[in-house]
Image (cartoon, rainbow, N blue to C red; front, side, top):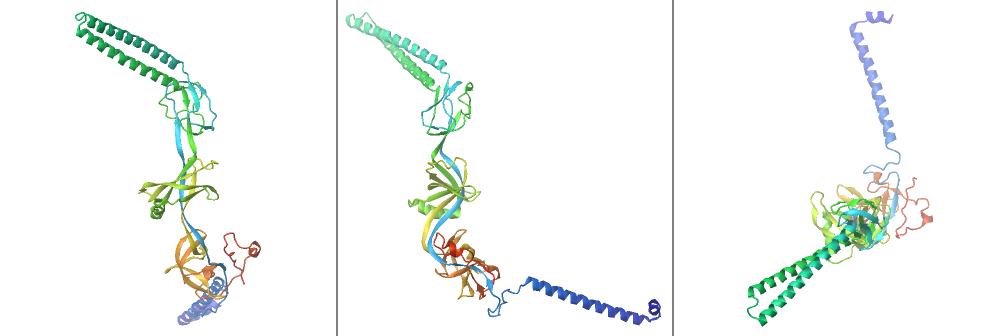
Length: 419
């Protein structure tokens, strides 16, 4: 029936009905969008959100954690990655070739310079010594005979002037000179043969700890073997080579050249424990252009051998210690367009923005050169919703009164508690 009415209605009435229906649908759509926006705003902005600027600080209270500004000594420490390097490393190589007949060391033992480590078959070298000594005796006999002949010629010439010519005397003297040179050569050959014989006993070149055996008895060893038969490494003392950025070089150089003893601590790869303490030993003479860093070498006593060659460590160089400076937790430092600042407690329940000038710092504390004084309190947690003049509440966290003050004398950090 409605279709009949629609067909009977004039075109102008049908157009008016469509417009009215469209306006009603639009109103419902706008109302739905406004409701959804209101619900989202209510969920996104909780009831305790800080008051907008211009509200005179009269807004909901924000729970924060606070810490006290303290005064104390602060060590200036530069950190860098380092590698443990042996003070001396020597490859034990044979100096003569031959079959290895004996190995007289235990892998990993400590050795002294000159200790016998292995032996090469000495028989060929003993025969060479005997041959050289025999040749020496032969040439010494010829020399003695030539000297006796010269003595006879000179005696005859003294008694009978024309019995021996001057040319014959000169020839005999020349022959004696040749024999003397031959004897000296033979003596050198005997010394060389004896030296080669001594090389059949392979000795430790330096003091240190010997490594694993590289050649077993029965093998032929050669003087040109690159790996040798073992490696001796000096572990006490030992050094660590680490790098620092070039921007930190000058402050280190000033104190190092003045004769100050700069201490270096070596930590394990995870930086969870200290391995050893030593002193800065040397600074490289050039900066690596590819990385912008400079190499430094520190020496460690390493009596307990906690450091091993080629071990990766984290080196911390203490350049100086600042005395009686103002210290705050690193978490309190905020950074804005105008530089670093902190939220300082202004009274009991308000905070104010306080610009500060920073000094050196680490992951836990920072030195404040200007802007704060000891005894003041700053916000260390809950700063995301703070504004200048915001109202806050601070309470101690559970267990803080039981544990007491930290070992460094700083006041225990206060934990956030929601009101």
